[in-house]
Image 1 (spheres, rainbow, N blue to C red):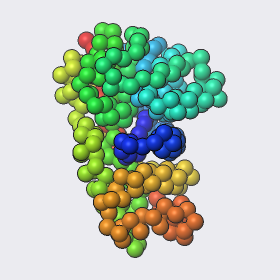
Image 2: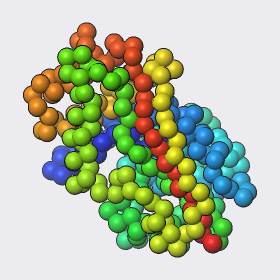
Image 3: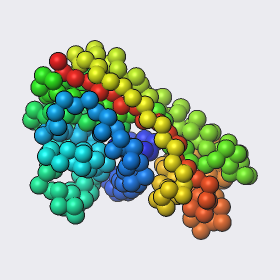
Image 4: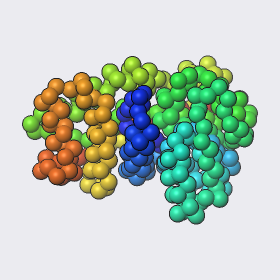
Length: 289
């Protein structure tokens, strides 16, 4: 599962900025995988598969949250992990080698907005977690997946209902409701730049020729005491949110957000003991008949 971060604009960025943004995004994706591991596993366990898949394609794999969940769930399977980011794929490859899984993973760098996709074989299962809403033309991507799958093959689309929230109601004490206002600012950005975020993928899957075989929404509410990674996850996510929301926030909100993000400050989000991770993930299972 990928992309727990808001989308940052890339136009006009220099190569060094791309690398820095890529690294920051990779860290968030790794934390997302660590914190939400049980929920990702629950989704893979729910999938309405008739037999265990042997060939899987992970579209927009990021640093491999879904890839490794699928490898663990289906020990006989091989996964082709596809992403546009070479940095993310290299990180995924390093993890696979560290877990002695490299013989079960093939990485493919590809722009899924391109007219022609690389040959990804004939998989039993295609998994796309938090990646379909990135597509410039998702209908084109859905048709490509439909054509790739054999009769009876399954396509699992997992999407975020929204970015995670971490602070309790009434926090921070000096600017209550700050997190809500930050999210409102990013929602305006996403509505303009990422119009398919939050879409209902069921009708689009049906229009692409799939038969919908199930839909499930998983509510995530993880207490901060559950994992020390939650503080780092919150820090990274709010840093990404700041990159999108800063221009829209009043000065007082921006100052309060910066206090949370200052790891040397007594107000740092890393020093709080009242954090939680709250979000929802919806999965659509669609079959080629």
